[in-house]
Image (tube, rainbow, N blue to C red):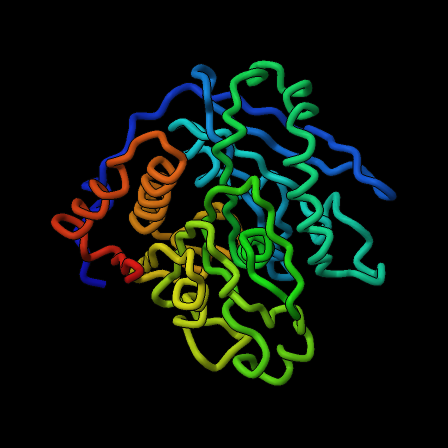
Length: 313
């Protein structure tokens, strides 16, 4: 792999600031056990934007939860974001019984869990008192990795059989190695197992950043890595496609170094993913209007070996 050492450090990013974390925050859910959350936030500052980070389903030997994705969640929180991470119903820890009729994927329940977070921000503030009164509820983004990206796609406006799952409170979204088109784009086995992957991305009008690993090899489809970019091409809100070079589904380690989804441990790729997604969030959530443009310029001039960005026309 022909890459400058630490090329990602040419990408501008704010210095880290002290952060605080609360876990578990528990929210009541009708007819089931409470939803557990982790919240990580700057220790100081007001009008803080909110990012809800949705974990993936994970392979059989890895159990994602609110406690995963620390390399991404901590990085964002130390630089101005309030990051809220649910343990989704599909998790094999603190989730719902996978033998229930909607199991094991609980894709509808995952959407309901994100909505419950948005509905109960007052309750979250009561359980995390240092952030009380400091949230900017007009600046909310969602981000999801893998199956979490599927969850976010629905909330951003993707439709399944014309059913609309969108939530107007969400201002921006990041899809990280998210599933692409379903139906005939999948292998026959995957199409039978994941009929709910057959999304229509044309309903996504909320500004969305799609992030892919250039070497991702999805086993759901014969199409290869470009399958993960479908939302960028199909969604009117698909603002940019960020492709991280030399890595696959784990994008260099966003789920953590010890996570089975991290098939390639690449600190430079991880750093580029963190810095570039943060820059996009800072611009989209009205923190720094120039952050995304500056990062694009720095990438092109000093770090093109590690990633590339395509913009919607």
